[in-house]
Image (tube, rainbow, N blue to C red):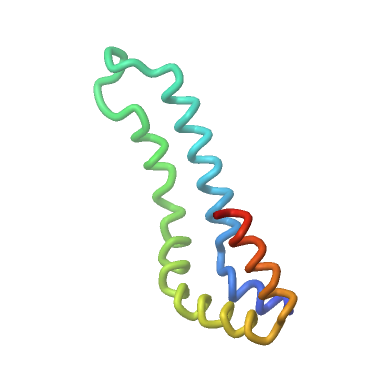
Length: 94
């Protein structure tokens, strides 16, 4: 697979994964010490507000999703090693 094919097949999923990892960590840290008595509002509201500038990543991901799936399926059809890797990966995760 070329770099361009990888980029188009996976869109910005790596960036979204990193973003989700950071958000999850912040939420875990916040919730570990939170009690209802300490809060007058949302215990994670500021974390969600930080996410707002990143929402464009989701728009790009959703808008390009079907093209990405189509390209990925095309790449699998043309590459037996990749197809086997995906099959093994699916088997392991099930």
